[in-house]
Amino acid sequence: MSKNREIAEIFENMADMLSIADENPFKIRAYKKAAVNILELREAIEDASARGELTQIPGVGKDLADKIREYVETGRMKEYERLQENIPLDTVDLLRIPGLGPKTLSLLFKGLGIRNAADLEKALDGPEILEFKGMGPKKIEDIRRGIALLRKSKERSRLGVVLPIGESLVEAVSRIPRTEGAILAGSLRRMRETVKDIDVLTISDNPPEVVEAFTSLRPEKDVLASGGTKGSVILQEGIQADLRVVGPESYGAALLYFTGSKAHNVRLRGLAQKKGLKINEYGVFRGDAMIAGETERGIYETLGLPFIPPELREDRGEIEAAMEGRLPDLIDLADIRGDLHTHTTWSDGKATIAQMADAAEGLGYEYIAITDHSPSQTIAKGLPIERLLEKKKELAEEAGKRKRIKVLMGTEVDIKMDGTLDYPDEILKGLDVVVASVHSGFKMDRDAMTNRIISAIRNPYVHAIGHPTGRLINEREPYDVDIDLVIGAAAEYGKALEVNGSYPRLDLNDLHVRKAVDAGVKIIISTDAHSTAQLLFMRYGVGTARRGWVEKKDVLNALPFGELYEWLKSGRG
Ligand SMILES: [Zn+2]
Ligand SMILES: [Zn+2]
Image 1 (cartoon, helix red, strand yellow):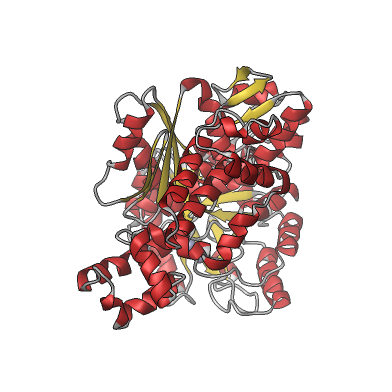
Image 2: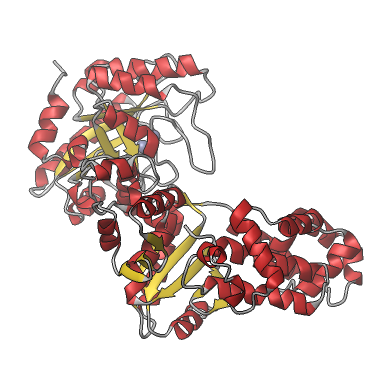
């Protein structure tokens, strides 16, 4: 896409660097002003540059025009790089700390050599800091909290943490007067497993007022930027949220642009160029005439493509598939007919069998499998055989009472270090659903771990492997396993692999699940719910599956009960 945003950001950073260096205020203001005007430019800045008309942009004189041209032509700006040698971007970032203005930061930078958050944190503990004007214990405490907030906002957060926040934000924006069509964009809309920030887009004929209302929605958040058609805040949760306000004629173009991914958008722009068209965040143009922009569908149409679902927009072959009319018919949340991996108070869950079944009924499911842990999981209160049999009785009673939903007796059985299972075959044989998982001995070497899991796949009573790589997003790396061999074995033995929808897991991940369906492996999308509320994690599992090009026909728990039951019984002798 056009370099407008990049260049505006560079100028903003340069302004900040100059202010930390305590440079001429006029120079600083010039960069800031140019940044704002470049953002509001109605065309790609490359085009203005090619025509030699950069100085017609308000606030852009000969000096800045030269810098823009240099960047457009070479992808670099020497002056920017030179400034960074003295004042790194980490220092500029410190300006996001509430209460730390350029004046103070400039003094700390020069006086104590503070260049990043770690330097600043250390300085806050020392005596010298109190010598600086305005630095009392309260101010120091505020800055300390600001550093924590800054750090938090810099991490990528897990999908399941951010999506609900994003949705509530969208709802709040939709209640601002004179807005329409508020929607999430960015990686959140693409259901990436982690996201950096929240992008919200809305339509209005009065952008400044909407931006103003947005930045004052909740008192506890910090406003990073506000003005024109864009507002940026850091929510109290430490996540940055950006709102963009557009006119209806550009809604689809802006949605496409801000949904990304960048790689996908670059490909679209290339296709457009071949057709003599130009795409930017405002629309699709032939010469000066705008020929699309209102809807994403309309924009894809001008390129001769069908609508491409956001989860596929990663430049992983979706453009080629769209051109050849072979985009997958992705699984939908509404296709899901039941949950095949859940826990109850019999092991480490918080709800009873009856409560879980009620909740599943409430979701309109046809079936739910209760799969508590096996005895090795002592901390998770895994069930010894006698307890398992007791549970089976209670479950049969519960199941007998219900007409609308089938309650299936299952287990999440541990795969032990040697690849054997935590219950004997005679026991597994009597259960409706057997999910086998690794919960211990994560440090095994690759061959041993791979063989361990494949042994479980070979057991005739195992239906599926649960969370096949064992990773916990932002917490624990996957164990070392050759996932290709696991997928191959699952295909060979007709076993399913799980997409665990619990958002810290999302395991298989998008790339692995795509390999699995390509190999013809059936998928179960489960929540691993340990409470009734966690049954709602299904959407994260479905989102991950969609990113992995999974279709309804690949998913066992999209089958009606009769067909699922047949599959569960097949191959068990
Ligand atoms: Zn598990
Ligand atoms: Zn589980």
